[in-house]
Image (cartoon, rainbow, N blue to C red; front, side):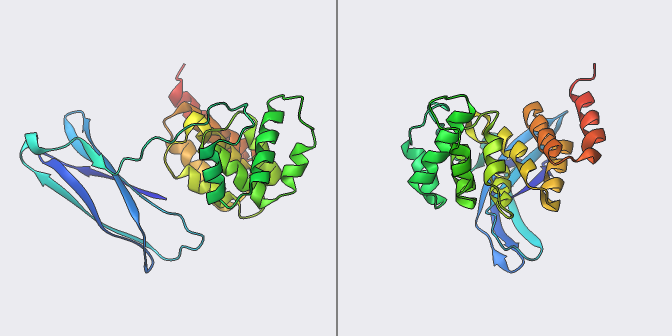
Length: 256
């Protein structure tokens, strides 16, 4: 989950940004801060993003208290700051069926067994055309239900993703599993364009929350690939009410 804030700076320069409190209802939430100074036609703004974890149960209003520490001295100011995460290590080969250490780490964190993780890798390779794999692999993966879905989540986290990965999500999804996709969608960018699969994959779960999220992405996303992935997710849902919004944004991207 994340909160965006755009703060006018006028002539002030930023030293640091501190989150004193972030609560949902009565629950205090741990958070990460990322910020940068934006110059926009002669005006200066602080672009602030505060990330916090998504929990299964979140009740009450969001309250955040943030301090922007500033100075009048331009030389002392910084252009960006906060806790910048190290880049995620991407999988070496999306056609590989080998369980890499980082992939096993992500699967273990999601309580996915090595057996189910291997079946997810096999299913991914079969979808890409590996004829040495039994075509029944998708049925075997689907039989694991939510654990199979979480195995695909682990693949996405390391960028083991391609244009047919969303079919694995469709085969394994059970009501409620979409929360894992929504959490990935709200986090940092994933390697190898895996975020495209996350957005399209949300189209396997026809819920009010999913439709609202994809429509929000459709209206706000500036990246053409992510925009088209959100449109594809809505298409899988049969959301005909989104057609007008899709057309409007396409014209914004390509006026001609």
